Image (cartoon, rainbow, N blue to C red; front, side, top):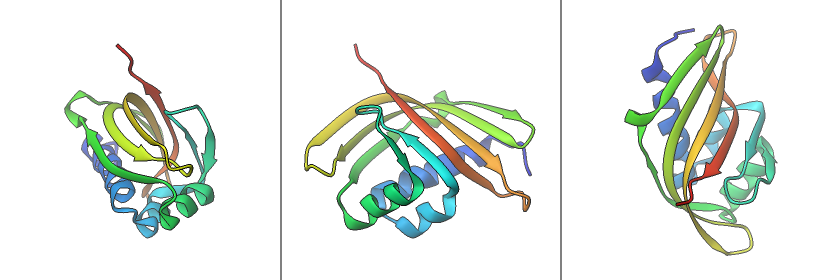
Length: 129
């Protein structure tokens, strides 16, 4: 496992790219089996399979995600890596409602025995002004 901050930032960008491309296959490879997402919109909790299903079906879409990696804070705790960052995103929920959020997020990564990093938890908090 590499404690290289740029590696986790690359994984973060791959996660955002997979969401905007609706690439469920890439998402599947990036997320741990026990992945948990806490929604920036309403605090709803979704597991890996639910997120993959919504993205693959188009029920949940992300037309745009702007990330600001230069503002990110990356820390390592053994085989766990944490990224705190900022995004601006547009997405459309399963009910068809469009949503825009500026947010701070926390992504938690765990290293697999092979050394590969997998996203295990993602939580967003809306930035309101």
